[in-house]
Image 1: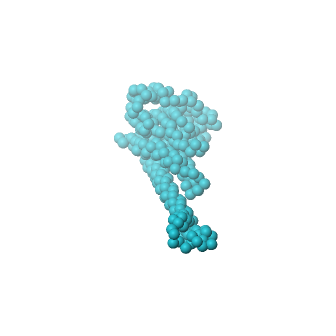
Image 2: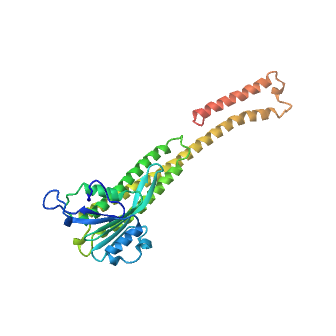
Image 3: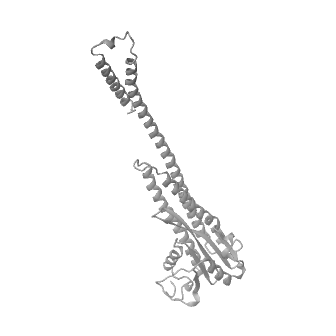
Length: 324
């Protein structure tokens, strides 16, 4: 939706996006466009931001106050600095990664940068291309598109984590998997990282409305309330995924305990079976003088039969009670 409708902004190139429609349908008057400069990195962003809003001051590229939480800061009464974490999920290693999105919005210009692979900037461009006839001023449109894209990417991360949790749940009940604890704990760690990146966003989004004058609001109050509710819903879903993983750990530990008890019963049953012939042989090995079986012709076969019958009886008893 810039000078070349089919291409998005490249790093460091200033583009002009339509803010309002002209008098006739499809008219794109330069007076109704807002410069949007997308830069390559954080340092270039703060350099461009200080040119646009001198009141920003400081060396924000190295300012620890801006890392790693979300920041919404009004500058010179007519500029807003927004720094927020971004998240994305890679399916191959099932890991959540975090980056950063920077946005400086003025009355007549916008500067942005994105660090990481979340693709918030590209998603915002697609959203703007789909709403080129909106009546809202361009800075507000850009801000809303970026915030919506940020929340949309976070929602996709939540869905991907939910799918990963469902796959892990199947592994927990698969006895062919030796030990799923590492995978379960790994997903819990990734969910924690995603929540750590999203919670500051929830806290800072309301600051997009100037508390002194709502006419300066970058996002409509109702739209902002929906965005906050969406982020809170995503966080609740992530919390539910985390609780489910905790339940999986408990179930896995219970399964391990049950299997150990089963193994102990089997060991005890076989030990009892093996002890019986040992006891019989020990009795006959005493060689007392008045043991009539010592003088029987069939004494030796009788003792063997006695051992075998006793072992068979014990085996059938343990099988009946479920120990074998």
